[in-house]
Length: 185
Image: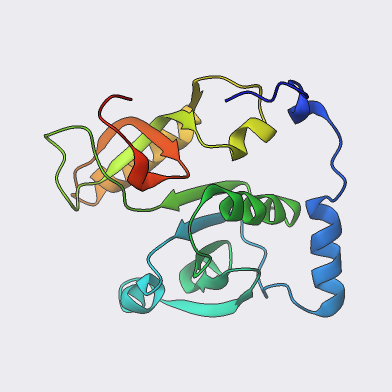
């Protein structure tokens, strides 16, 4: 994807910033009770409720998403749900979370696969993405790929495997039209 009129758009100043929106929400009293260092974005709406016996959480407010604090971390880790899907909303939330100090963000979602050895329910940790959506091109120069932070990928893989689960590390294909992926592409 390219932006022919503004090829360096990612370097331009924004009209509205996440700082301004967070300050506005704070004035209205509409910020969560926690300022987490790490966040899990979860498209599975019921996950915090289902995992509350294994990983106790408590509702900590909302910010275009329901925010649940993981109790044993004393608010350092939160789970966000009920924000819909798609990169524009995830990016909006990620920018606002960065303003309040969140440094690690993980998106847990479902997806199809092009690999015959990956089955439903398998865990895939993405170390690279093919950029076929529009949002990331507003933040970085246009390119076919973006690589994940290697240390975060390794931390995730180690955490998953240390609990006896298996995972695959590989590339994902990001698109805003998941039902329009084609074999030809």
